[in-house]
Length: 309
Image (cartoon, one colour):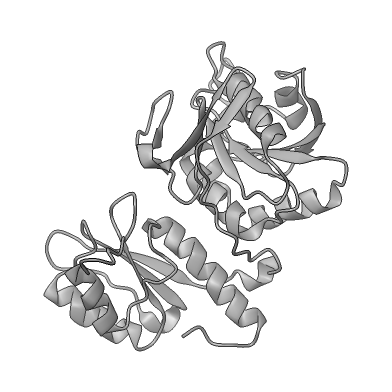
């Protein structure tokens, strides 16, 4: 089985020189760590993960489409953007072959790097997944749901959580899936040019909300409310006005985003409905992922010549 290795940079590709500068490893260097796998290597965008964006995912998608030899793919990138890359991959990549996203907590050129293990685990998971499976994340022996994973420790051997995002484990050559929530909705037909919506994230603060963006310069807004999605009286008035102009999505500052309890509706949900904010389709997404989804939704509306309600 051939596996395509999609190198999008990050810590896993970092090799420090004596003067402190970085010499980035190429895909062929990473593949050499896991000689038991038949790799087809692609250096798609070997950069710091803060530089990755929708265009990067577009280049990944085009590389995959041109590579008809690989039976599955492993995409490596930096851990700071891994949760965003993995979720964007869920929405925007074709699902004809499995995709597993991974990276490393320690530089790939270091003797104590975890990169080789994570690549090995990712390849193991990629081989185990059936076709038409949505992307998953493999890191430190755990399998994560891209929609739920979040980096919760800035510097750690295993920086990701929460526990509820775990969908299985990888032990030696055995991958065990306990569940998968990737969904079936796809935006893979969109061109990168469609993904140019201007969407801002506004975070509710302790005290008055200051510096709210000019709505006339935006195509959408994601508001990260407090806790379970609450926001102040002052913010409520601002959001009501904004929602009359552009789509406004309710998320929260929590890792799990906004959750709707069907039995007992939270007051924040009632507030959101009254103000014209959107919740449906964005439940469980933190603000960053809600923004990715809104950009995709706006892109689909643009491609169809429609206006997103």
